[in-house]
Each structure stands twice: as structure tokens, then as C-alpha cells.
Amino acid sequence: MSLKILNFFGDRGLRIVRGEAQYVWDSQGRKYVDFHTGHGAAFLGHRNPYVVREVTEQLNSIMTLTPNFLSPVLEDALSSLSRVAPEGFTYVALLNSGSEAVELALKVSVRYSGRVSFTAFRGAFHGRTLGALSITWRRAFREPFKELLISSSFAPYNDASGLDSAITEETAAVFLEPVQGEGGVVPAVPEFARAVARRASEVGALLVVDEVQSGFGRTGCRWGFERLGLKPDIVVAGKALGGGFPVSAVFLREEVAQALRLGDHGSTFGGNPLALAAVKGAVNAFIEDSVPFKAREAGRVLKEMLEDSLRNIRAVREVRGAGLMIGISLRFRASRVVNCLQSRGVLALSAGPTVLRFLPPYMIGEGDAEYVSEATGKCVRECYG
Ligand SMILES: Cc1ncc(COP(=O)(O)O)c(C=O)c1O
Image (tube, rainbow, N blue to C red):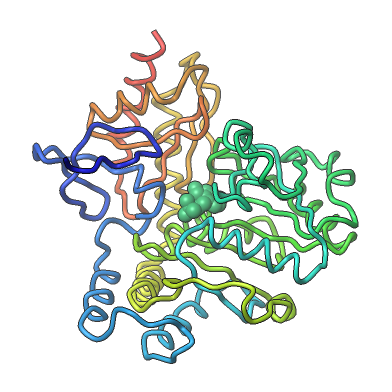
């Protein structure tokens, strides 16, 4: 008997056979505009040509090597990453998923500060491994495993009044998403983000910015925190960074990186040659194709069109987001609209129970934006009735 996949997210009932740029096709030959993009990983589009070229070439030389051996692809990937790394960061660790990168950020913070408590925010999502889960807000995710979690507190997001009590001399690090993704696509207010940074620095806690979803151009800036005027100590990236290939990164300031000792962390596949080649290709695409600029422009057009087609619908509370990270807050379950959109040839996802989330690739055109906006208007009306 053939094995069944243990499905973490619920079966979407589609058999997808191909993806190209902003579209995917199912086995019936039906085309979909992809605003789901594998939870945002294909922000550079499916089979981005820069990424495909680098990974294909790499397959012909070596596939397996850990980064404690030098190699041309490691040198290339590091010099590519230097072109997009947040300013002032001298070290990068390469891992395979966002959660793993968050785990490393937690460990480094403990090493650096000698403290073991963390602060995150209501609505936060940092992953589902045990450390990352400890700073993830949603009770349903945490509750079954609560005995295994590390000490953490959650302050109100976008409300500075809770910061003094939540961030104290015991706090090793504060984890902040520039735009909360899973929590409902909520951009951080700059004054609030700066108050977080001030309070962290006052008590000697590190500021970790989680850019797994918001980073690498998606919000219209290279990194989402740039919009907020922050100077974080650690930046965590993933999803889009590998152009669809599984890669994550932790950027560290010199003195923070120095706190980590040999043996504190490790990963068999972290920084493997194919992932390095994918990063090199992704950075090439990012620079050559002015990805943040295009995401900003496409995001503006899409948001305007969505606002137009959702105007005067009582079921819609708000259309919000930054760049191509867009959420539509509804008065009913977003999964109903996700299903309706799929039947109309649009793949989307939700962010919590009542927010419809779009994470489109940067190259969407006006035609895609128009099609999705109209379909969204129709689906919201249909599902709310
Ligand atoms: C902000 C944020 N951090 C961390 C993660 C975890 O990343 P991964 O699913 O790659 O482990 C996610 C995933 O959605 C995320 O949005």
C-alpha cells in the first residue's frame, strides 16, 4: 500500500503539475494565478530563470558539501548576500527553514546575554519548532506543547504601553515582525517599532527582526525593518531568499556572532551547494530586476484595485499590508473565500481565521491584479450572503 502524506495544512484538492513565473497549472491543464506561492516562498516567481540557471549549473559540479569547506559557490553566495545584507552585519549563518533560523537566533541571544527569557508580540508567528513556537502567539498552536516551551511573554503589538512590563532586565531578546504575517498581515507602526528598539536597548536585550515573510523585497523595501528605521542586532530571513529553494539565513552583528561557540549549533544541509547556488541566483534576480521597486509598484496597484472592488461590502473590514504582502480583514471565515478563489483560478491563503492573505510574486502585471481583484469582490459577496 502506498504511503499517504501527513498533511499539515489541509488538502487543497488540486494536483499541480507545473509553475512558471506568477502562474501554476493543474493536471487538467487549468491555469491559476498564484498568490499563495508556497506560503510566500516563490516571491521571485516559479522557476525564476536566474535561480534555475545557477542551480542547474551547480548540479553539474557538486551537490553535497558543508560550508566548513571552501568552494566557489560558497564564495559567490557570500558575495551575493553581501550586496543585499542589512547594513552593519558581518556574519551570516545559512539554514534550511525559517523556524530553524529562529532557533539559532534564540540560542545566540542566550549566549550573548546570559538570559533565557524572550519577548514577542500578540499575533506573532515565528514558526512551530519548540523554540520558535515559544514566541508564537496563537494559543491553539502552543497549548498542546506548553510544558515544553521556553519562557516568553507577549506584549501588545502596535501599542507601546505594554513594553516596559514585557521587556525587562531578564529579557534575552525581543522578536519583532516588521509586518505580522500569520497574525493577520499587520504592518508595525514605525513609532511603536522604535519604542520597542529603545526599550530593548535600555534593558540590554537584543532586538531580533524576523524577516522570514516580510524580507527580501516583498514589502517594497529590501528588508521590512528599513521602513521602520530600526537597527536590529539579528535579522532572520527565509522563504523568498532562495527563490523557492529551501534556504534561511541569520544575519548577525560582529559582537553578537562572537558569542556563539563551536558546537552550539549545526545543520547537515544548512548552506549546501544547491541552496547557495539558489541564493546567488535569487540575489541576481533581486538586483537585476529591481525587485523591491517592482513589488512596491505592483503592491500599490493591487491594493487600489482590491479597495475598488471591495468598496461598500459590509463583510470587509479593511484592506491592508505593505508592498506585495496584502491582507483583507473580513467579518467571516477567510477559508471560504480562499476556496471560492481557487474555483475561479486564483490561489490564495488565509492569515488566522478571518484574514484573506495574498503573497503574490513580484512580477504580477495589471491584468493579474485586475483579475484577482474582481474575483475577490465576487467571492466575498458570494460567501458572505
Ligand atoms: C515571520 C515568520 N517567521 C518564521 C516562520 C517559519 O518559517 P518556516 O515555515 O520556513 O519554518 C514563518 C513562516 O510562515 C514566518 O512567517
